[in-house]
Structures are given as structure tokens and as C-alpha cells.
View (tube, rainbow, N blue to C red):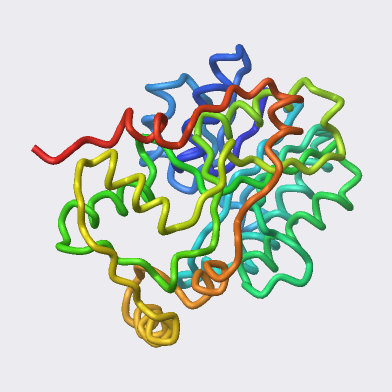
Length: 298
């Protein structure tokens, strides 16, 4: 039995799909079983009601399990869902329950760029969550994905719509920092491969694609795939910060936040080789992967 948190999300669904395809039974922790019933219909999982933000609600949920895959995370804060609560406190709750239930294996999703002295609160709290896992005494493996893309992603699909609909291509800042996107399928393959790979215990893996490129180059790639030729319009970061502060006050789902602007000012790249070697990941170019699901305008 494999326990999965965050199963209803973009990455979570792909992990559930691949874990089931590998022959494992799956139990998923969800806040609203009715809204998550599609996971039962589509993948034959067991649903159990529990909210990782509240430790009492997940008591007993991991009995009989051999591995926990902890995927819960947020990219922006809203109401009770703060970085501290979701990335640190919730991870502590899941780790504690795993230990009480006798679970030995723990696979944790962090983020590329996470480090102790990071500028952004997102990365700081991701580091604190990692620290909890590292000190847990469990047989842990930590994954740090880069920018994740796939047919159901909210990032590349949103950027593509902007490229298609606007008379220009909006770029935050100069667009010169680098990213190293990876497909959601390969992220899931890493987690599935680690379940039975004892050599990966106590290791932290970067999950990133085979090529790094700037945000400007990303938009160039999207334009080639979509068949558009539009000028870029760069929004200076000082202006973007003012806008982000306003967005955070009035919008539940702002287009970008002050914390994200901090991360945008540094490269988000890593070394894909260890994960490729240990989990037999077959990488493809970003252009080929995205072109399969992005459609040119009619």
C-alpha cells in the first residue's frame, strides 16, 4: 500500500497513475472525498478523508502502508494555506503519522533552488520541510523538481494563451535568468522508481530537463511552437513588485506574487544526471514535449 498526499493536483494525478500502473495499491489522503471521487473511478484508489494541516484528521490513515509519497505544496499563500503551514507544519504532521504507523519509506517533493539561506519564503519553508524529513529517521528520498510542464499544467498553458491573445509577449524583468523545465511524466517516474530503489535512500535529487534556457528563450520556443511572431514587452521588476503587492491584497489567485519575483531573479537549474541514472529517466527536448499538447490557433 502506497499513501499519496496531494493526489488531486497536476503532479499528484500523474504520480497516482504511474504508481497504479506499476502494480501498487494506493490510498490517497483528501480533504473532500466527494470532489476526489474521480480518482476512484479513473485509477481505482482508496480514498480516506484527512487534512494534512490538522494532525488529528490523519490519525490511522497510514496503517498497513509501506511507503508515503508526500506531494502537498503551494506556490502562493491564501487564507489558512500559508507557506509555513503547508510546507513545514503539514510535513511534520505527515512524517509523525508515518512513524507512528510503522511506515519505513518516505518520498518527499521539494523544489529546485531550495536552500537554507534562500531569499524567498517559498524556498525557505521548502527547506524547513526537507529538514523535517531528513531528521525523521525514516528511509527518505527528496526530489527537487524544476518548472514542471505537461498537458494539464497551469503554467505553460497559461503562458501560451497570453502569447496567442495579446499583441505582445509579456516578460517579467529582463527575462535573462534560466530555467530547466521537466515533464510531469518524468517527475512521476522518479517517485515511482524510488519506491523500490534502496540505493536512493538518503539522497536528494534534482528533477530537471536536459536543457536550460532563459525566460526570453522560453517565449521564443513557445512562439515557434504556436506559429506566432510578436514583440516582447518587458515589465521592469520595480513596477512588477508594486503590482504584485496590490494583486496579493485583492486577488485570491494573483498572476504573480512578490515572493515569486524574488525567485525570478535567480537561475532555477540543476543536475539531471543522478535522477536519470538512478530512475532510468528518458528525457526529451522541451520543444518536443510541449509541442505535443500545445495547439496552434485555428
